[in-house]
Length: 506
Ligand SMILES: [Zn+2]
Image (cartoon, rainbow, N blue to C red; front, side, top):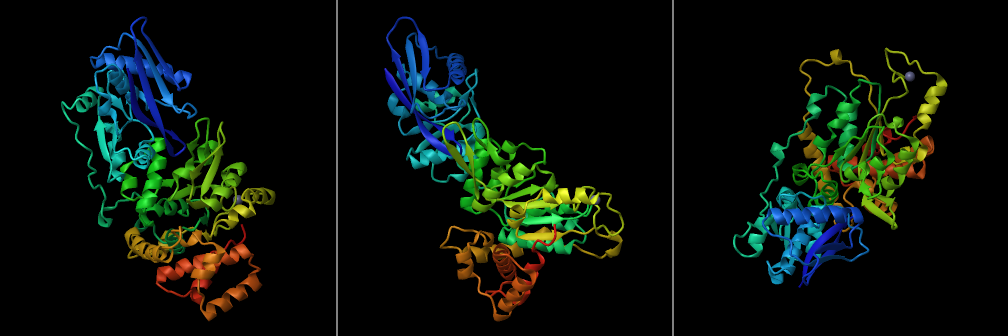
């Protein structure tokens, strides 16, 4: 008898439909063949399916069993097909009717005892079922939370094979998954690091607020101990929350990597801080089975690169294209693959290798040649992709009075949120979300400068010899500053502040 069960595979972040056909034919020498899977996975899958069935109380039929996975050209790695294969065998041998398998997708790995184990990539696979109009999806119970994002799909989380068989036979039905609204309200959001923990550094905080509001890349430069790291780690606490569409994009990436957590469903933007020794593949993405790198894990969130000049030059240069396009292309055996990578780059640097160049009290011990070489590690085109540059000087804590109160991140976040709402209205007809994503034609359309502001910008272009790129960058930053203050037109004060953040000498 022939049976069919639907499953899915992921290629990059996309789900591909896989049909598992099982044929159980005649008596004679029992065999078990799987075609359409890579060799190594076949053997492992056969073993798991066979043992899981036996341990659930179903002997493998005493016949020739052939399992075909179609289409053949889809690379199927991993173990997500176990469940579909096992159910297919049971249907082909008459234990379950084929009709019970219709309109369903089966996803899950089997353990030898017959338990259904967690798999990676549940989000793109449910999305696939949605696109293919397959109304019901059977998923491992351990993956259930990942289904929270889908409101109109029928999802059955299962913990073991027996449970699923009982469900398909109509004996005991499994409860449909209903997502418990996990959304935390604004009041109860908690972040490990908060602006209120940082004394002083008002200028740097202001620059971070602008970066968060317009999703601008930012570079902090300062001596060790000035608080660059703490400031940077507080960034998630002032970012606006993820919109629904952004949440789905982030969830897909984290689901494929197997690291999806509640935080994403609470709208918390990703914050990634890879060390400068992280490999190129680790940062950019790729590998034999291409996986997203740190720049994609930071999609719609922050990529924090501490000790920015210490990252290998080739890695930094490989980031230039994604910084421009918001996607990264990685190569694989059959062609190329793209992953989203629209992140906010938050870079922090010491001014020189020893760190004390320009320090008011300590002296720099670096030879001039060393400083030159150090600074050359960051190329002009890379620095050009950063909208805000800010010095973070050491703070004399004694200078701050005891009554000094730092503003909380919550207060900053509410201003950022307002600026974000203005942008949402502005770009409702476009695909953009933030000011930093504006093209030069968008700038003409959305950035009206007052007469004074125009004059100021013109003078700056002449006196500071601003490049075309710097010119547009200044307007984008000024647009965000004006949004934070609630101004429709960009005034000269906004341009003046934006000019302060341009790249001076690095
Ligand atoms: Zn030095």
